[in-house]
Image 1 (cartoon, rainbow, N blue to C red):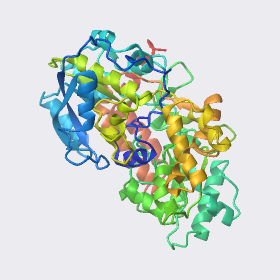
Image 2 (tube, one colour):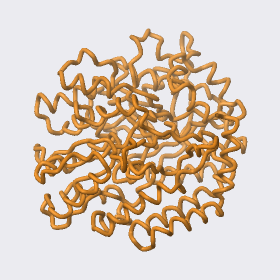
Image 3 (cartoon, rainbow, N blue to C red):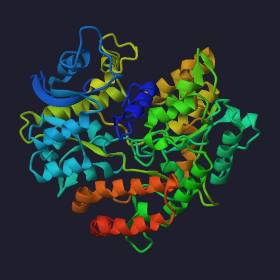
Image 4 (cartoon, one colour):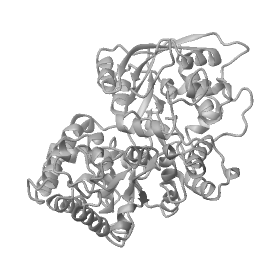
Amino acid sequence: MKKKQKVLMIVAMVLCLALTACGKGVTNNGTDASPSPSASASAPADQGEQLEVIEVSTVSPSDQYLKFDEGENFEKNAVYDAYEKDIGVKITNKWVADVSQFKEKVKITIASDDLPDFLLVNATQLKELTEADMIMDLTEVYDQHATEETKKFLTMDGGMQMKTATFDGKLMGIPSSYNPFQFQTLFVRTDWLKELNLPEPKTMADMVAIAEAFKAKDPGGTGTPYGLAVSKNPFSIETGVTGLRAFLNGYHAYENIWIEDGNGGLVNSDIQPEVKNALAALQDMFKKGLIDPEFAVKDTEKAAELVYDNSIGMVFGASWTPAQLVKGAVKDGKVVQEWGAFPIPSVDSNPTLGQIGLGVDEYYVISKKAKHPEGVIRLLNQWIAVDNHPTEEQKVYEFGKDRVEKGNNYWLLSPLRVGKQMDNNGEILPKAIENKDPSILETKDHKTRYERAMKYVEDGDTSMWWEYLISGPKGVYSLVPDIQKNKQYLQNKFYGAPTPTMVDRQEILLKKRDEVFFKIIMNQVSIDEFDKFVAEWKKLGGDEITKEVNEWYATHK
């Protein structure tokens, strides 16, 4: 879905599907196909008999998983040619930067007031650009040029995501939307559970007991076993695998969201007593050697190597995690690791509420100097149309000029990508795969995932093992319907633009938080250091942010 361009997330999403999520960065859209579209379904609202070609500039990240066909590059390629031919929009790049440097270069571009016609920015930058009068009010151009399909697509959530891009009644950006109902899952080596005669994890106590058994028995035989995989940015939304946000949720604690205080107001989750309980549990696990002592210096991929080599058999992760686990699970065409997907366990009898965001944290904005803002809306219309119900010819947008899947990930070339705000994958896919019944499939995503899973089930294609663990009868998606039915999730209650003090102090507060939390987890300081952190958080701007958030909340309940 979105789904948003963090290296590990892209690795997994690339393996998952040639579609954008999550998102924080770039995601698998899981998009529903509209009813059979008419010939004009994907055409821009302003299309006449013949579109005059207009040019729009942007900036692009160069991703290692985007491979060009021979003779093609960012200046000339089949995807750009298709946009020009189909909707009359010629795409040019003001600059192209490696994905690892892209966000920093966007900052420089904004600071130097050298914007392309449109670009992707974060929520803080959206507000800053609005206040600096550097970007266009899109209200009129969107209303005039967006198709009905586009307008419906971007308001499936009731318009919440669009509200986050609206300032004083003016639409200042197009949300790079993704499905917010993406839940973290606990992945456990089920072959090890069987070997050690351990029950499946139902509670956090079960999870810790399994970690202790994996440490003590070393079923992988590596001599360096641990219980739970963790990496150096465990609380970041960008860490889709080897993070600890789900662990916090199991203790009814949440990472940096605004939750109800029981008195009609909002409080920040980072400073609540439940977080202290979760940190105490992590500290205890660290002392027992259940967490790699070097986790604080290992990025996600480095931390995941311990999973691949059989040193660790348990990890929290996003729905696409199996596409990462496959690196260790399948060797030489054989499945050598068996994994199971389980709901986040709870520390007590109350169900775990998995924290979710709003489904948007980045926005496409149009420079006030842009000569053809309607061209950007044409790109938006076309992306939504061809990503949801492409004709055979339009498969060029996903696969390149030969329209054949070959791992080139040409979809990354589309400069404006939005994902669907909800899907029914959990209702449809597990049933279809278990019964081998494609007749109930409804969407392009359903069909693609079903075909991949059945290659594993029927043809023994182990390269598709990961899809079965995502979409199969006991896969990740099979857990979602109950979570949604029982509302076992907690969404951030604050969806406004960053407040003035947030812009000024949020980064400092998060840095301080991570510093203290790491010291607690690694047993460098007492758990009581958390109380000192709370007091300091308030003094460093937390109290002022809380005041600003509640002033906003008073008019947005």
